[in-house]
Image 1 (cartoon, protein in one colour):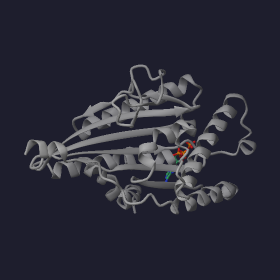
Image 2 (cartoon, helix red, strand yellow; image 1 turned 45 degrees about the vertical axis):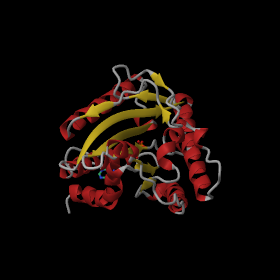
Image 3 (cartoon, protein in one colour; image 1 turned 180 degrees about the vertical axis):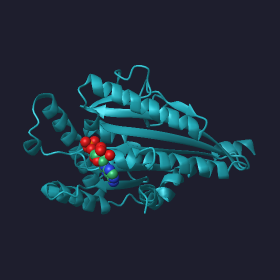
Image 4 (cartoon, helix red, strand yellow; image 1 turned 30 degrees about the vertical axis):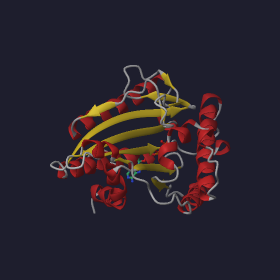
Length: 291
Ligand SMILES: Nc1ncnc2c1ncn2[C@@H]1O[C@H](COP(=O)(O)OP(=O)(O)OP(=O)(O)O)[C@@H](O)[C@H]1O
């Protein structure tokens, strides 16, 4: 079996969830695991073995193409990284700019990130260029900040707005593809100074993610999304009514058995979360008004 077919096989498991965002669902796919276990490899892949990001985008474009005569679609894409609890725009001319999360002033109750670059994407080829720009910006920043790129969370967000020609109905779906920073045991890695601060921030945000999962699992009325930038940013895709898939990467090395058990325990807790029926974001009011 070629590596490509392994990647494709993994993708086929999640493809129906991914493509459902065309129908107006919010979807979140995230890679979780200890440092060096293969999260970036899974999400980004390589030129010969494309990861979940590219496979997802290819599947989305194929599906939209198949519906060409019935629906029209607008696709926008944004890319951010969260490093030491600071959000950075990877598609900006100046990726060093810090961004924040605010309530949308349109009164919808939705969150938004003022100043975040959101690129309208015309084709799959255009997407490949944008992903390359995002990777480049991440790499540049990584060099400036002493090679920390794998110590940040990377979020690729695709928003798809569809309009059905016959009814005028409008759907809005969002796909978040998340490459989490790796968890690490500070005592084992011996991190100090800046590395220690990074590790503490990563562990803090992964802990916040765990707390959100725990609250969702227990069906608590208050879900602590605001405890970290990561969970706050993913609020509209992680909670009730959305579709979430976690992919866990584990190390094959015996010396990492402790971390592997931790990751698998976390996965077991995530498996028990019931988000309830997914809710479709479809606006038929426009359609009725036009009839
Ligand atoms: N399935 C795989 N096949 C071949 N190589 C792999 C595989 N998974 C990971 N690797 C290689 O292992 C190394 C570490 O992988 P990767 O950078 O994806 O880990 P990570 O979990 O993202 O780490 P970090 O948390 O530090 O960002 C890379 O060189 C990657 O190419």
